[in-house]
Image 1 (cartoon, chains in turn orange, cyan):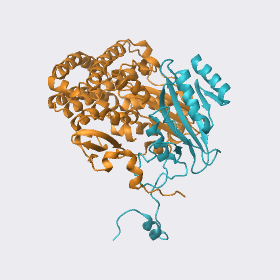
Image 2: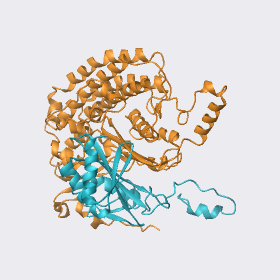
Image 3: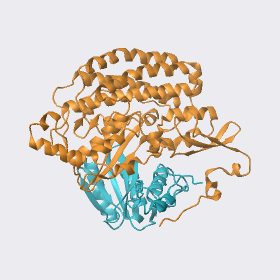
Image 4: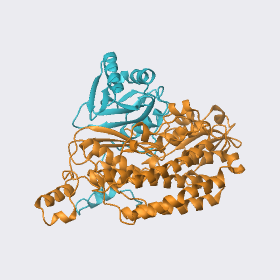
Length: 409
Length: 170
């Protein structure tokens, strides 16, 4: 049925320059098992001495077929798989998945759930940026930053665990709201974090911002112009560091982001240092949003009362026949979704995280396409790294902030 | 919903004679394969849709003809609006023109569609598989591609199924 296509060496010749064919430059393999590729990314380098002539990324080592698997699950069950895409931003993945279903079936979300979603996603953004900062500095031989950032990240993971029971694969957001309400000690824990965290950002900045070694490794490395960034469809902090103030939280507000006060940090240089500055400032802005969300947190339910899509609480099952039927139907069969497709996008720590979700009138997604920011952003690596040293390539992989689970899906 | 999308849809409809659809405020245009490059070019240059946000395909086999819809999601930064394009293509080995010349980031997105659906893009600079191994057979996101469950072995067909399994035999 399928015709097997063998890849011949001739088909690969267009990837390298003519100098490689004459033996003028060296082809070198980097990865997939390499500590600075942040996962299993394989790069084929064409080198002239230590200077990078071309980079050919080879991805797919972490491909798990999540899109295909989702087609065999009900909507409620497929939510669990969304965490496994970008494992540093799992709540953001939950959010875009829930938003897509809520748009498809026109489901309401209570105000308290909206505010808690924003709060949790912003905490997650901070934790994701902390992992980026730690590993990026580690790639540039600044070991201690990593230890500091993971200390604070642990506090955020504790908060997420307190709410969902899981540190990383939370699946805390469900269609129509949240899995359950936050515990009593939640507010104190977040307030405690908000108190200690802003001085800690100053601490990281004291280690890096004016550090001559760090400046040497990041200034004028991988300069990306705003035109190139737009042509290549780059989103997120990389685009903002190239002086384009684009943020989906402002441009197409979702989950009530229009009610919060925050700025979009930008930078004019477009180099690795600019991207560092933008992400540091984003953490401060996220702290502002978390603070506002906590102050205005309303009471009330955290999940929609629409029983056609949301299972009834345990307490109703013993006293209401109706509730028992809904419970049974939702957990065995699932809920039907109209035969239409929607595209929903949110601002993840890495850029535009989009989901095209299409139903077929039944309880299974007909097609779920994840537009992941890392996949699109990784495409500019060859453009950024041309003419730089191999050592700078390591800084550039770090500055794009890829998560291989997000790239390969 | 923004007026810019409606105006754009109306204008493109008038110029290219394409069909327009709407669902919960999302507008999408059904474009024939031979016009997709011009439509993308026009949307980018005249209507400010400067970002190809995503590109994918859906397989409607066996229920519908044409079998595949290739979907483009364009985003306009000046207007903060989205528009979708759907290109129906048919057959077991379909092909349509690449939009790489208009949006360079279509390079990997189209490679992924080739890898997952077996839809070729004419004029693409690097039409190789991207996620699956280079010698993989088949295109996993097609609806006639099995999910890969373990076959149940009974006494009457044990050896037959065992012969198909991928493990080292002595």
